[in-house]
Image 1: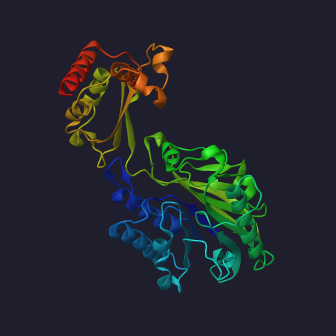
Image 2: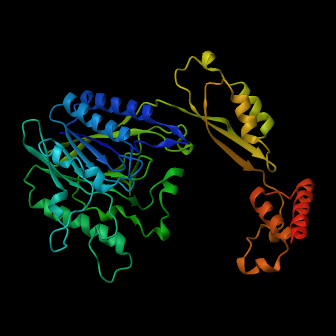
Length: 414
């Protein structure tokens, strides 16, 4: 039995305000083709199908169209989809009545029994071969919100211990179904300890003191594979080959410049995992950095001017461009200067990364302003401190004169 693991599609996402519908469609078409080429039996999508909890109708249609095409092109394909933190659990599950007679299964939320206990069996699904024999069982666990996991009394970390207990319980329930020769695998959408994160991952949510980070040991040791989502960089966790983030199929930020995106394919045979490999996802819209290191504006503008126009480049797709500028202080009309040079160039200006050169600022000036001391400071002192902390440079004389002029006019108005 061949299984493909993917996650974190973020359908409907804007990349620095640029629509990515075409990119996502390229990925979905490639995935449909890859499922056929690799003779995949099971497709696992471990959360964050959509970028927003309320995706547009066009984005939802894109997803449903993919499911229709993929299952028609690959008869017998089983698809298991779990919700991520970006997905609306109820919205993701809304087509379930239409999917009851299909091999597509969606778990958006943790269902409860009438007494309030967790209905673990609702997260357990058989994985069948082409002849209908059950080859394995999958624990399809969605992103866990407060109230979804068991309450563990008198513990230091209720979230981590609750998640551990949920996986142990759903695994124990799966053992009641398991027969000799059948493996058990799991899905999850969470943050694990020591996971390498990208800029986008850092902005997802703050991990306060690591309390929302789950150890690799939280997953039962007899699981043959753990298909994770949530972190956008593909990686193994805890040194375990079988506990993996597959990463996002599209770059989510410029920190993924030159990073190869992938899906994971593996075999299950006689209760064991084998032939685990990665398949690189083709880049439909590349990322471009000019220059590769932050440089002075004059040098940057010269390099941008050397970029090819659409007719010269021969590229049908314009790359997303990040411009990296090193400045000693504020750069008036910076965006206008860059956009003027880029007019007609075969690029999409996505980001201007402005960095300020280090300067010798006194320790007093570098200290943050304490709110309770603010009333003791003159407006000029506050302005100087804020300026220096932001730009790593003394306030230029002409700006000081302008500030003094403004404060004088304000005083006269009173």
